[in-house]
Length: 369
Image 1 (cartoon, rainbow, N blue to C red):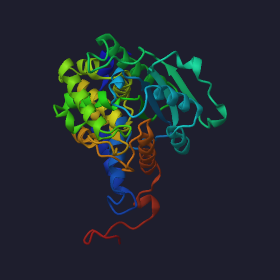
Image 2: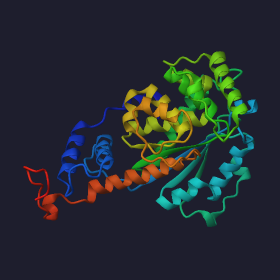
Image 3: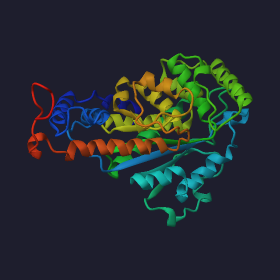
Image 4: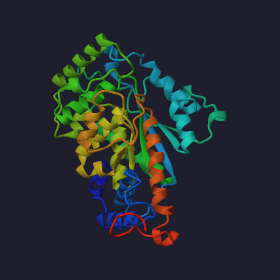
């Protein structure tokens, strides 16, 4: 599906389904509101899906991978080769995202959007003994990583469109496999730098509020990273009112892919669980393409990375957990999906006061009779 067609299909949440869901939640055989945010999740899910009692059985995480030319500026603790090595680890089932996906019964798809080096399928031999769930590696390589954003645009405008439309196509493939909710993940050494540059541009914020230690760089490297982000914005001057221009000038192939996936999910009325800093920068981008997108998003976790909270506040998203994670890969999204699935089971399986033959609350005291 083309980008324009996808944007045209994104609609507001279904208010009628939300009202019905809210009424049903109030009838459940518990003190009203006693499940806290789980009630809110049920109601938002109803608005997204149009079903007052939606079921979330088929869950998936898509982890987009890509390299970044700006890595040569010393903005990461790890060498660029780690992107490739970690993608290999994903396919062997040995990474954090694999462990958590297995635990929560979430299928994983990894997408090569532009990992530096030869095609990954030549170099990777998956260890099938570690794969309790099928892991797919998709090849949508746009280039040998992006260009250095401190010297010029990350990519061409045509490549930016392709990245977005690749994300749309990957989502549609996932939906064809059976899909009720999807989470986002990333892998790309150096990708907190373009993410910070994108967020600074889209939010009109000082880059100093958004740069962070990423892989764990020291104070000297952090100061250098701040200078690099500022230089990228000065050299490229991305137009914050044109999200395609922002992606083109200071983005990443995998970030564009994640944003496209979010747009497609909203167009198909499928909830999206957003991972950490990189995925949230993609969410900012997607919501700039269409303001309704943010209502289809959930935040899996509060990242320990500086600047993440600022982006979440702008999107109006409240993280579901705070475990001090700062890894990416989709790890926080998997936790979020598990909570979202539990909320849907409450909507589907809990009994009302009448069904459970439990006395209603006393009308005068507000307590149970």
